[in-house]
Length: 420
Image (cartoon, rainbow, N blue to C red; front, side, top):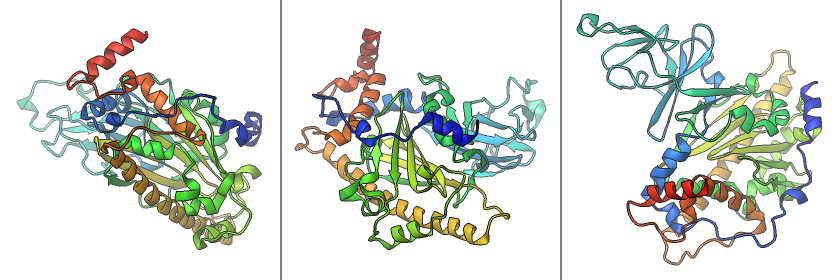
């Protein structure tokens, strides 16, 4: 079967009236305020979520040639993703076996035929094995495999590189995202290359869960995002979470656009013939628990995510990609693709700035004595479902009052054992 036939068989485009409906009598209160302010809760999240769930580190095209590498840091863990001489991608802890220094320092780069630690000059082959030791007579004989770089569990899915630092509850990435397989295959993301300046990052004053709360519902789009409302208006819908993933879909409106960037984007976007008609003028988002969103536009694709730095400090990170412009394609088509990428990125940047402000305001509420919990709309059922997933991993979040200092981790362990 072709990609198109697999997609048509999967039929992922659904009636939005079926996905926005929330069950009768559901709990609309959301997480308690202490969940957004507790440093003990943050430590629990770092351990149970960010070290034990799949994290999207980047794309194979971020290390296109042997010796190329890129780094990925989260929750006190450090990984280096490197392409070997055999053209294979491998992932290691960015930790020298000698004294624990970073073996590569820059976020991206090229290390030639070996990875050389900048501290004492120990070197490692691109397959991770120990190569040479500075002044070898000063240390005992070391086995090159046993004392090589420590590997990190990873999986490449449609070109995206996912890593997991410790064993966790999720199955393979291909299983987690299986229900989206046919649809994502249409975008040929394994062939994509970076289209911007590389990875982008930004720090904001907010708890990371506030970012997820904003991103898990489209109820705020008409009020807070004039660009997105102008782009697809009431055509946009969020599906319910299912098995750790969610899907949002926004067909572009055909009527008049008020904003020049949206109007220009809609007018200049060419027909991308390898996509079905339903997706040639639509934006698609796939969310993956706990903190990753993949996006797919007709002309571009990429991801964004967030990581906690403190209970009220969060790092945002992402990257943009696209299929290489073909020399065989019409020059005018290539120019339109490039212009569409610029304009969609502009719309996205405006939307991100608006979301950051909403996120900061949400974070402020958790510290206020006037905040008495959420009153979620049926159009925010995705927020409730996301909170349920957090509670599944951390049942302590069912507690309405802040747990006693020093008791949170043990209480959560007790609740987990009582549930089994």
